[in-house]
Length: 120
Picture (cartoon, rainbow, N blue to C red):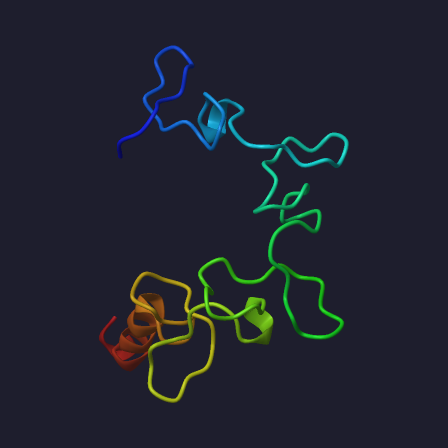
């Protein structure tokens, strides 16, 4: 994209916010937890691992909300994120095809192999 570039020599990535550097070269705030060098999530002062960013709205849950869940504020365990595209399945999607572990490409390969096991 357009916009200002990172001032680090040889880097062509976009500078972040009001800084002159990209995310990899210090253009974001770092997590406030001592020893953690991960970028802070959203408008918080901590990374997702240490409680920063959007959190699950389920009472008693302290997990981070699913990143691709713009309309929901829930973690994957509580229904956030993309769901399997197989009719009637409510598991979380785990691949680009939008399928869960039970309905994905590997599962289809295993089913085929089980049905043709006598041929080998």
